[in-house]
Amino acid sequence: ATMFLVGLKAIGFRKTAIFFAASTTISFTSEWLGTTRGIPFGNYDYTNFLGYKLAGHVPYSIPLSWFYIGFACYLLATVLVDALGIPRPTLATIALGAWFL
Image 1 (cartoon, rainbow, N blue to C red):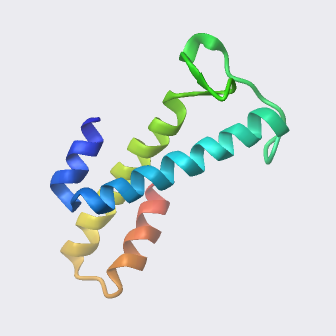
Image 2: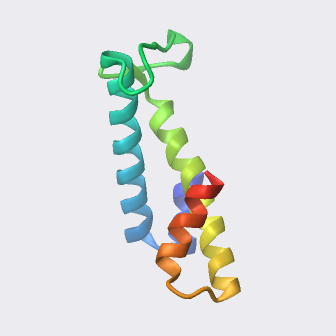
């Protein structure tokens, strides 16, 4: 919730909501495929220690953690790209944010 609020202040609702929806959907799908089909890293499972599991396999905290860690990297990249005046800021921000992640 804190990272979402930071995003609202830093880049606005639309971009924050898009990042939240994309990151949680992609990470949940990846984790669900991993825990049910073994794709792409082989079979694994989460214990109940991490709390309630979405679809019976993925702890709710996993997609949220990918959101806030990824979002922190994206925001840091945004600040650096803006400060350095790098051309094509969207591409540079995504590339630098991915590298940070």
